[in-house]
Image 1 (cartoon, rainbow, N blue to C red):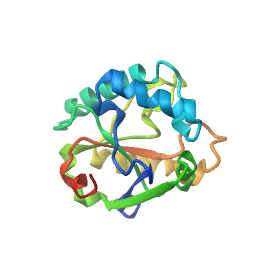
Image 2: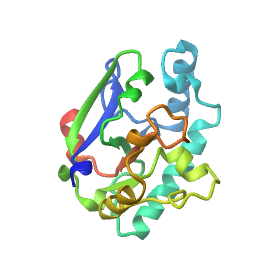
Image 3: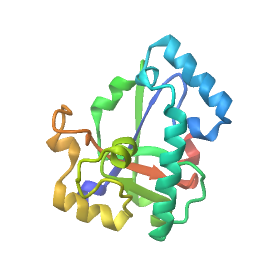
Image 4: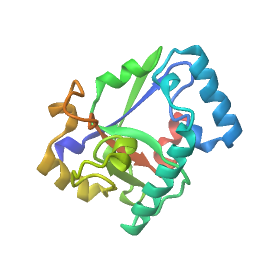
Length: 179
């Protein structure tokens, strides 16, 4: 259970933690994303024009897969964290910050995992068994036993898109102290 000790959330100091574009009305989210593109100051500025549409579609798919496995999300769209530390994500933000929470603070019915970021996990067609999969708290332990932690075997990203295990937070209660 050591690998599952901490969840990390990376964010920019100027906006604060757990700010979620998916929670906003589409036009407002698009305006914020366009502003980020024009500022060209963060990883988000490099996102495609159809990013928000794809994101919401993938989030809906992840939510449905999680519900099929017994998940009970109270949010329409998840907040994101990584399972274990992933320092290269600090490069995504002009004034990067991170916070950590114990995975034990999260009810199993309110947290899911993907082996890698949601986008490549749900979109790559390379036949890897963890593609198009959402895992429960118990299941991700077995996946880690089989494939290891991407942060350890793919630190530079040269072995594929798996750079971390993503946690999708479907419940606001454990993170309310930060918002």
